[in-house]
Image 1: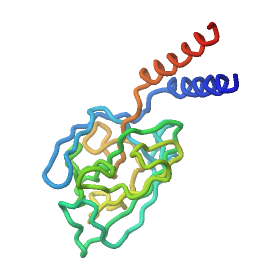
Image 2 (image 1 turned 120 degrees about the vertical axis):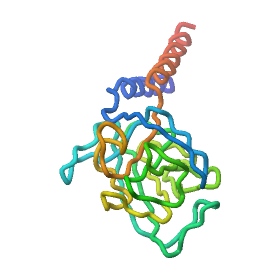
Image 3 (image 1 turned 45 degrees about the vertical axis):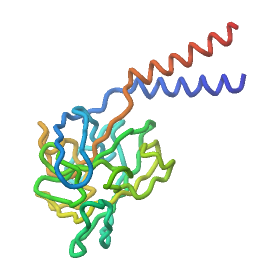
Length: 221
């Protein structure tokens, strides 16, 4: 009985999460692979993540899209085996924390217009980008505060590495996830971006409803 009550509570919480309104900064992106590190494959529709509060004249990201972030400049560290870091250039290590009640299954870092970094996997909307993971030859994900599974879970913090970071048009640091609107999208900005894939709400609802139906059958039996 206790396990049944617990599962019902989890299902109710999951249905509440799944019914949340769609993120206001879901964006359409166009990706292409370039020689260098790993192959870049990004879905056309992704969510953009950023600041939970407004600042410096920028709007906050809405609920469902919010992360905390910080950056430190570091000595060189090669995380892409096919593209060694340049010891004469400054690298950046970025920390991001998931403030949402659900997980992001894949997460990418996208460069500011006019900027560059050396462990890029390809281009998103015409600027350099990479998948933040530990697979392939490019392994920028250095630390996960939760399970080491490449899933950006609720409350989890990640640390990832950007080789040879050169600021773009904005001149801002590598964690400038301040303003909704991807470079090259209709609402253009001049900042770096974090984009991610979230579970399909319809699939999540169906899974949770299936669990609820199973519990009802057990009770009747």
